[in-house]
Image (cartoon, rainbow, N blue to C red; front, side):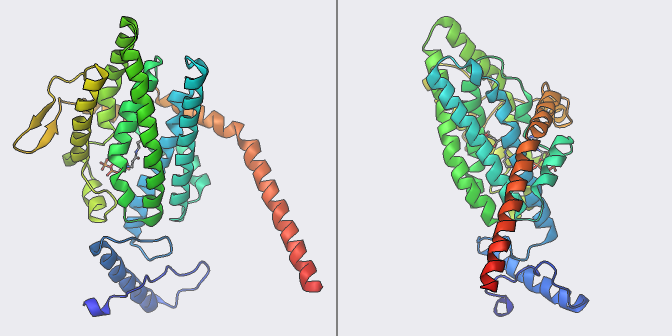
Amino acid sequence: MASQILQSAPAEPAPGRHEQGPEEAARRDAEGQAYFDKVMAEDSRIEPRDWMPPAYRKTLLRQISQHAHSEIIGMQPEANWISRAPSLKRKAILMAKVQDEAGHGLYLYSAAETLGQPRDQMMADLIAGKARYSSIFNYPARTWADMGAIGWLVDGAAICNQVPLCRASYGPYGRAMVRICKEESFHQRQGFEILLELARGTAEQKQMAQDAVNRWYAPALMMFGPPDDDSPNSKQSMAWNIKRFGNDELRSRFVGMMVEQVKVLGLTLPDKDIRFNEDTRKWEHGPLDWDEFKDVLAGRGPCNAQRLERRREAHDDGAWVREAAAAYADKQRARQAAQQAEEIAA
Ligand code: 3HC
């Protein structure tokens, strides 16, 4: 009954607090569930200390950690081109973009940590090859034009997928997505601008831009995930107001955006089946190779092994930074404790 539903969030028990027995635990879960259902019905937000169903927590952790890993692994194809950027200006822009991706990873790992998963554990899962990250980053960046195609198509797909996530029901995730999406917009524009310049350049440059678009188009469409009929998580994630739209709906919107923008570039999308269906009012595209998608997810994409190897190396290379940061934090804690002891004694 509405009158019995709590108006404020029942908190998770504080760490170390002892349960008062099964009846108390059951009462707390029932109150928590009622509050959670009310939040969902009102399309409001769950915050880290609120009670939440274990399956909701697990789904969020799965999606947010995968998303964080995607941002971090996604630095690699572009970082590879920083030293080969064609001008100082292009190098500075590309460096800023790659650093933004690192920042996105950090916001998202922080959001995932609020659900109780330590960052070390997430990183250990990634480098052990146990965690997923976006399929798109297992494809190679072969030419400078790929920097344009990645920015325009990959970051474009990311925006299309992620703007609705700004309204995700879990507060820390939704808030992180607001800033991420703003930065992704800049990324997409810089990619578009690289392609535009190449497309207006020599015949060879235009061909290089077209070749990059040809190679990144289908993998970018697959970023949205499997077709709805093969998407085991979508329905529940939408019921929990985490995802707002199904994979196919977002993919169709993306095709509609790209079909207009490619005209400005003077290039073409490698898909003769694109059309606007007047009956469904949706954009349709040609068939995608879902066997290739499954292969990439199973670790058999063109660059899976290389991406994980590079991440492991970076993790090992960064060990001294983590040790130094931990030693500094210990020193600060010891100083504060000594200062407090002095104040109490005085
Ligand atoms: N790459 C890798 N795995 C994918 C995938 C993709 N493109 N699409 C789906 N999957 C995986 C899912 O993670 C799920 O695996 P799991 O059950 O083992 O976790 C399985 O395939 C089935 O897919 P579902 O559609 O049921 O999964 P979801 O409901 O979680 O939808 C998603 C998948 C659309 C990717 C969703 O998780 C999502 O929106 N995530 C947040 C956005 C995100 O992670 N984007 C990464 C893109 S890259 C990026 O943002 C970096 C930027 O700089 C470009």
